[in-house]
Image 1 (cartoon, rainbow, N blue to C red):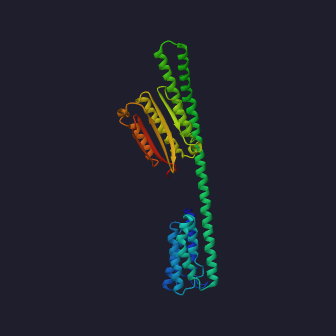
Image 2 (cartoon, one colour):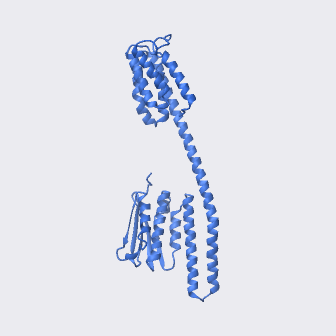
Image 3 (cartoon, rainbow, N blue to C red):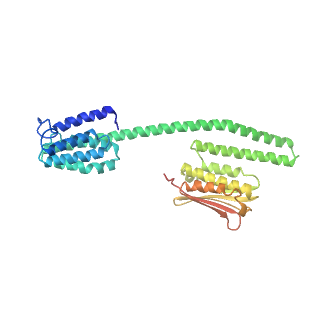
Length: 357
């Protein structure tokens, strides 16, 4: 809504012209300076309502309507069909949601029309003027909302383009370095042949870690580009586990996973990654089951393993577990972790399918 000096000055001029001809016959041009006290007060209120309507449109509307009713009740002849209320209606319709604008405008507009009901021509003209004022305000709001939505879309496209550029740079730089490292480790392991088992084991471990780092990089780049594929991420996590740990996936249909909100999908991947990392580091040889199920409006992801070390599973004072709980709670979900029935460890997170605002 325009509030510049030029618009305010224009409102003041219109307010003055309205105030001096608002009451009395058409040749009565000094309503503020002559007439009864009621006439003068009503003219002043109209002047203030028009001059200040850009700063408090709802208050201006109600004040102008009250002045119109008071003027008619005092017996004065209103000759401008209450221009003050019509101008205020335009801004109320433009600055408020349609339902709220209707609630604010209904009573003052009806009161104005009822006050003018004694003059058929005046009430018809006033009704038409107020209807046009409402449509003008509604059209202005619709146009402004469309412009705002277009700016938001343009900003989103610009952000997405910048994220894609950063993702591409990271992938080209870091991805190339990690790939070269993994390739050289694999080549060195092949050259050694059957000899030096400890060195071969170390090189194999370097390859596994390097592939895991590439998977993590792809996941992070997916976050940057809002293109996170949770099913692919989970399968990559399971495929990248070292030989001492095996895991199986139990997933719902792919279309269910594709409907997950981005933050929910990313949280599922993060919980599974942290849990499997904990199995690799602290559980020794183990088999894990990663299950994702949907019940009603909730999604549950559980990671259960049969490994050892349940009493020392979180040697880092539970920082990884605390991080998972915070991430899940941020989406309105809950997470539990502890020894599983029959041995091993179980992590279970429940998340809403619909992401909260």
